[in-house]
Image (tube, rainbow over the protein chains, first blue to last red):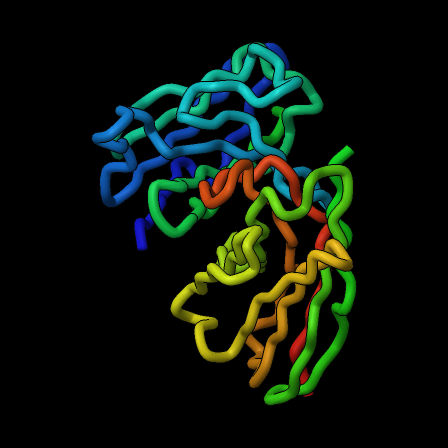
Length: 112
Length: 120
């Protein structure tokens, strides 16, 4: 299985500021056939299931605000939340679907 | 709209069995693979199993292979997860999740989860 790691474990960000979360995989998740990164970001709030935010590393899911941006390729990826809002307080997970799905351990974003 | 509703969770003793059900609605049931994913505070999100729309193609994670069985019944729009020889480390919230395609592993639709506690 492909292993996913995330950093930091948690971060506190002031409203309106930027939050940056990193994720690494121990193997590339880029398909050589279509050059797509089989990589997604999820947001989870207490008592709720995860919600997909971004897929193919940088494509926003339907209804996701454009302050959420995904970047990276291969084995290194970043989720940036620009202009943090109160409702963005949550745990964020990365996931690869290049092979048997695996998830990162999560990063908790709190409002400072 | 797409809905996935799990049931069958509860408290069970180690070594016993439990069957989770997931009733799906709002989409053509046979067009999508359905997965089970579980979550614990310690181990996070763990993918467990998938069953394709054809009901025949299945895959399991190594840590549940041989103990868990996934199946689906198109007449009931329901997916099942039969869990045998349960261990305390199987204690988790179990989510039924719809694939975004036939077998991609990208998850846009999740159920609310069923809590399973394995304890004597």
